[in-house]
Length: 410
Image (cartoon, rainbow, N blue to C red; front, side):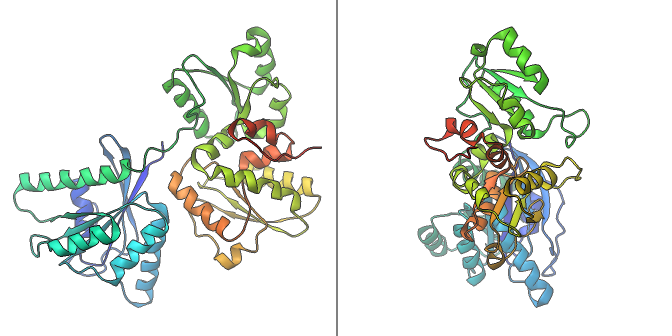
């Protein structure tokens, strides 16, 4: 399960850093009376009961000034796209343009928000201000103070705020698991896991681990083997013993020749797309591969940073397959992690975008990112779907997830 991100936003000197220290129970963020002490986002993880691991992100004040201040404000607004819940802090009953601009940004990216009136020991929250905010924006408004002298009262105040945070996260519903709705108790799911040179020594790649755990959680049986072991497994156990085969995309074509038509086949990457990505948009966007021509620009979106090798799936293998399929040279741009995307104007110059499975980011982070590309008019595919399309098995490996899918045929 991906870590949920909670962003703390607001003007300078409203107590954002004091708040994060109180929630974490430690002096993590630097606290000062000087405005603008927090310049770059500060991140720290903690466990919340019934939620799991979350990452708090303390941002720079959105009223920062000067050339550098403007860049900090821009970075704070950019972070809205990456958080699963926003805590908007204000004080003194002053809820002005900056706070309203933040609320508009939260609404644009469908980010739930808890509004916190801090420093209420100095100036209590005005009931009229709270009512207006709740009526106009439909958000929870919490009265709070980081400086309550009585330890018991402070603990109760923190517990109350944590309850609102948990509510904001739980109302979104949990992220879909990688095998959700595909496994019933006793089902045998065969996972074809070639030894991946991109994975750290002695480990499986994360989607494989996620699939194994999810199958076990749902009472299924996870059979893990390498490609060359698959034919013998069918001979020994019979095809009827297998509910589904899931393979690494890099051996898609090879595995597809071994799996009987009666057994559903898909890849870890496609399952990740189903769990996290805009699946229908991927289905629609993938056939755009056939329209690529000499010099067209292709954007490759990796949601993590890693060392690149000669066997890298996104930077080496898929680009080579695309150019071979199209019979021409293409212009590839690679963006790692959650680095800034090109402007909307520049995005519109791309003919195709390819998104990895996104195992290292949350569903909201991935969808907000891909949505910007789609909004620019660029067709988007997923690593696994593009490989399936290029090997002429697109319909076979996606048909169990949709009523009608396009396919590339010889």
